[in-house]
Length: 460
Ligand SMILES: [Cu+2]
Image (cartoon, rainbow, N blue to C red; front, top):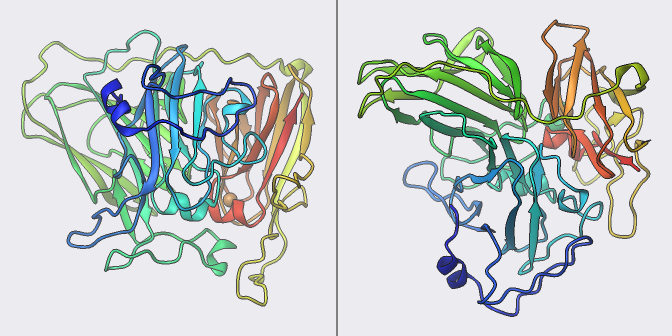
């Protein structure tokens, strides 16, 4: 979706009000200076999910899914974001280690982008991998209506896949007529969340993608859902995990079943069957049953030179100094078992807690205290303890954790920006606090984050 200069000029006029950005000079758009690699517009756009119906979605660039934004590792990218929604918004770049001014959290890192306004996101991604973006305003509705997209950072040196398939996993909260159903209910918000009824991959139920026979295929799974966990499995064909949540694993891991909470990603590599007309079926495991997610079908010109799955190059993460690390405990808890609703029937927003504190919410004039203040450059070990009977994908903006261990399972050390904590699980993660700013720290089940399971840490 790189926008040509001509298309860019055709799409925007002069006299745009650009929102202020603390670190960057104000960009003035003129026909002589089309400075942007991408134009990303958030706007209402009806789409057809259920054949013959209209869903009043909110989309990026007019449809779902928007073509992935492709950046290159170590190279600056500039994205002109245009808010054409009827309400304020921002864009957060999940998993990218970029300056706080570009992190897209209203009030904490930038003012909300008002309807009709624009904002220039400009950053240099240090890490290659599969990432995603979404608003950080009115998240239940904005993400629920479709404002989610993939940003793929290509490796600095090409890694040689024959085919690269981004797969956005999302359940839509829609009814049979295509109209939206409620994105939340109090009862579900205090349990595992409200699942949408219409499952989709890239906006389609059980899509089929054709790949050349013998091709080395990279599947990029992105759980962009508000609520739902996916457990990816490819039971009848060899496949390997090559990256978890954007970060390459040291050695490809044979894929059995891999669970992804909201916000999480998974890169899987496989060599397609050598013959034409063959199918590789990709499943979602629910309990002991396997359900179809999508399929690959071999077609077209075969690739005859042998292909092999290999490890991806490591990303340049700073190495935690475990001997000098400071340990911090974070306990994820809930306040009671009775569904708390106010007199208006709406959920009580102070139900889930981090260290006995529910997120208070914030505004331009009222930013609550951080959950913790970290010293710039120092290594920290976060001990994440889930004492609730539900799973929580815990995400920290601006950093990538090294996962050291869990009290429930053993694994090779890996890196992630989102840890899926199972019930009663305790996980230890380490990282170097090398990125100054105020960084959101929250559960990515949107109903959990909206009802308390959120906060931020300050690094200075
Ligand atoms: Cu949660």
